[in-house]
Amino acid sequence: MTDETLLSVGDLSVRYPGNALGIGHISLSLRPGQIVALVGPNGGGKTSTLGGIAGFGRRGVARAYSKSMVLRGRSISHQLPLERVKEGVVLVPERDKIFTGLTVMEQLKLSWQPRAGKFATCLASALDLLPEIEPHLNRRGGYLSGGQRQMVGLASALCAAPSVLLIDEVTLGLAPALVNRMAGILRRLGGGDIGLLIAEQSLGLAFEIADVIHVLDAGRVVADGTPDELRHRPDIIDTYVGRHASGTAARNTISEKAATSND
View 1: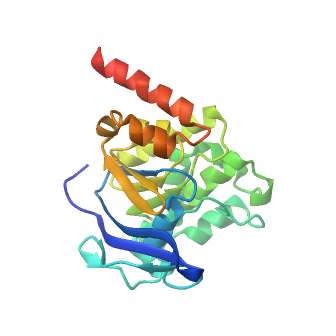
View 2: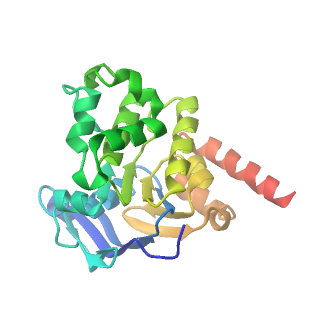
């Protein structure tokens, strides 16, 4: 991880019909090889933040506004989603990650961007990281399990040659073994040149893999810091994250890590 700023977002707000607040005045930055996590309760603004950065507030139902959004020194504030993808800002959404009528291979080819190099090279890299999908390359997406769809969605995003990867609830609905596997995948990605911004309800996972955590509630950032800094903020954990079903497990993870660090 370098000190170079890859993505800088200044004063981002997203609003929905009726002027309903999605997020308000959020600023964050991301460096190559860094993992930044957005955590908080349902409706806190995690998905709205990722959508605003991906450009989906430029048109459609939501409206996104920001004072600045700079990728590698260039403004992308006025770009549409496809333009941002071509610049390297790629979103893995919470749902509808794949086209159920297409085979896995067709989906990877559809996502491929020429700047990623030859498709065969891109495919080999994706399968090296996610070998679980190789037996299913010729299967249609509608026949895949939830975990397989998550991995195909991530592989498709990687074929778009991201420099910034936005991942929304990648562990949603996964069994614990798959959550652990996905954590390993994200750690490996975070060890490269890609910057990862993830929205995650599992505080335990965020504490395990993230370099920086932003806690969101009601569309606002209510706390941020490193896992070590937030581990000693039980008010934040209980109030803003403890509402989740995974809250107890998250607190246990935090307590175990704190005990280990004090040994």
